[in-house]
Image 1 (cartoon, helix red, strand yellow):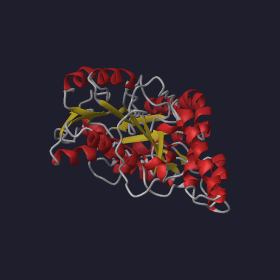
Image 2 (cartoon, rainbow, N blue to C red):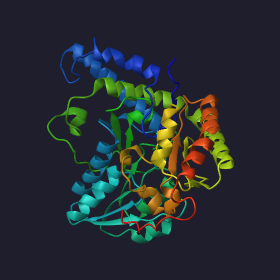
Image 3 (cartoon, rainbow, N blue to C red):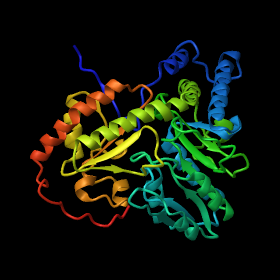
Image 4 (cartoon, rainbow, N blue to C red):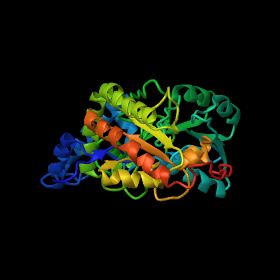
Length: 397
């Protein structure tokens, strides 16, 4: 009998919803036409893309014409940043945060080497931003402010309405990486004046390889990919029709499950979190306890290595992450936890549990039953069990 998998790594990727899979399959077989073709065979595929665009727009509270399909959240982030700078060549200043995903941070660091001035906003011990620092950092030559909607590692939800108000008063453009937020919390772009918002399909039960970028109507835009007329000339390349149709269905499902995410899934997350922290001494909850995604718990276990915890969990069929999946494999502590000033002996033993609507009470029960013994076993062989480890160098991310 095969071992049951308990999947608690949904901030890394999610399973494709059965309804999504069913809707996309015909586009791998009988509906293979090119949506740009003049004939009716291709035109029917183009019509399906229009329907998907309308579904995504409905889920975000925007107009279909403001949605641009692409390959992933990283492409959306890169497109937004480069478009904002290309459209405002006289402005050479960017503001972002120290806890952004590498899809933004790496671009910012690259732009610094090209002569742009970048301000990295710091966070406190709970990962919270100081909005006065944002206000003081804005300049007349600030082209763009990029602040993630929700953090992928600790789940913090940032105050985008207040941030937007501050940024708009100074006339700068605002981009948000909402890859982790879309599908987990309600977003209404009719009321939130961001200029760019990036999302990724595989974070909300669509397949990998498809994403979307919201570009507010009237925002000056410069394409990132050139070479075709697709997406009204804003993103060249033949459309991933199966992926786009899947994203439209996934967004429709996510919208219908938002309440469940914020009630049943949140209750599962809270029970897991409280159970682990009450059963295991020397633990620490990372992130803002009041403003977090309903599915995310980042817990540090003092004196042990996160990779060792994951290895023992994996033997039991339990999937989680020792940080963001994009940086797993690195021996360096998470840049997010470093920015928060999490002590060395806690930072190395951090585990991110991220749930979805497919998780059950039985999943939580298994983790609560197995984790105390795993941590006890690892602490018995930890070289740090009798004292603190070395001090971390200052964060330079």
